[in-house]
Amino acid sequence: MAHPCGHRGLLVVEGAEEGHEQARPAARAQGRGVASLAVASATVNTLGKRSVRRVRPGLDAVPVIRQLTRQPFTTSFPSGHSASAAAFVTGVALERPVWGLALAPLAASVCFSRVYTGVHYPGDVVAGALLGAGAAFAVRGVVPTRGQLAPPARPRAEAPALRGGRGLVVVANNGSGQRLQGRADPVPEIRAVLPDSEIVECAPDESPEKVLEAAAVRATELGGALGVFGGDGTVNAAAAVAARHGLALAVLPGGTYNHFAHDLGIESSADTALAVEAGEGVAVDMVRFDGHRFLNTFSIGAYPELVRVRERWAPRVGAWPAGIAAAVHVLRTSEPVELRVEGRRRRVWLLFAGNCTYRGVGAAPVRRYDLADGVLDVRMVLGGRLARTRLLLAALSGALRHSPVLRSDRVRRLTVEEVPPGTPLAYDGEVCPAPRSLTLEKENEALVVYRLPGR
Image (cartoon, rainbow, N blue to C red; front, side, top):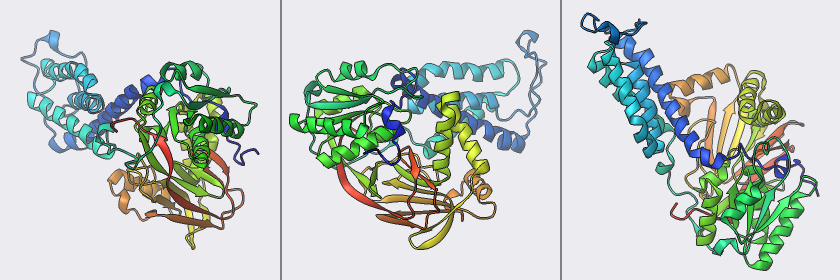
């Protein structure tokens, strides 16, 4: 029977460009560096220079050959260039210390050049560098590095140790679609790290449910485990099958985001292989609703519409540009949804429910510390006069947790009723029409998954 939501993601490997597994640490470090730089630059230009208004040093003692062709016109304290350089390098170092060490001489040369060319006093440079480093630590306070995160999915569980992957049956998507473009065939990647595993490819004209069911039956016969190569939508479908058959699930990240794999401490197929060979298993929660299950998130409102627009535009412009454009489009055009939540009438821009508690305030959760805490992380952005503007101002002012347009709670069960016909819902990247009423219920430690040893 076909899945009611279509499971578009099941027939394509939700992969980014070839080599994305190796590029992900670099992307994280770069993103943290850029975010730190942005915070430092904004602080310097809005608070630092306007507060002190120090005049720049005179150029009489500076040789002409050392002077800049175009002299800066802003005030001297603190040094914006030094702040930006220190912020970027410190941000990178907090994510990847070795890379930060390699970039440190570049930041030092930027700081030195500001004094050498006579545009700053040494104190300006020192203050700027300290402010930049502080900005990087401030960003880390909001978005923790991987090293800061507590080990997720704490409950240990029995999982077979499969040397070389012997007894592991891996379902790999082999379809053609927007997210497979530019990516190599996944089979050699799997074979390289799990040479003795059995690999089943899911072609576009095959039923993914049947492929997963057959793979689960085979894994049961072998006394092994079920594996899946794909993104969150694919993993979600495989998780339901694995739980039904009582099999441990090995997740090989092959998608654009791979949120569930990352929360397990798994960033590559090699990580999965280490976990499978060590037999490192943990129990994780799942959430059940209206005949479906999910591992990550559920939402009604703006996000499902964002997913639909992104999927429509991505074949033309690419996944990431489409995501940004879709977010802008949805913010401009979306309307609140009127429904009843736990018996109370609500008008919401967004109703979000996460499987377990997510770190981060507001409607944009970041990561999970624990994948088996027994609760739903529920967040609502309420509709009303200037609701979006008020939410944005609260985020910028740091008062998001206390914003009157944001509601959050931790519950074990959530009932949603009187959903308008045709309203879309999204769960783990899949979008489908919402039923008139539904109930989200936690299933504690319902699935055993492999986790990277030592995490």
